Image (tube, rainbow, N blue to C red):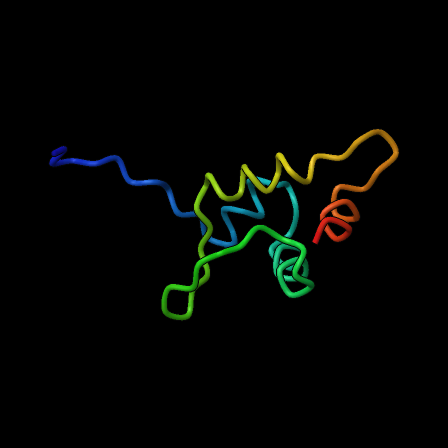
Amino acid sequence: MDENPVRERLLSVADVADYLGVSVRTVWGLRAEGNFAPGTRIGRRVVWRETVLTEWLDKATEAPGESAVYKFRSAG
């Protein structure tokens, strides 16, 4: 058994906003609408696993002429 397992990076809302190039307010707005990658609440903080965020991005990638957020809303 591996004594030093590699831990997945947990992203704060500021990390996520920076990663996506949007404001923290936009991240919270998308989350409140139910149109964002699922996060994990740890105490009062919400964090996102990096793999969950990238999977969400892969699913939400827009086709020509299509909004990524609209596509995600339609799929839900």
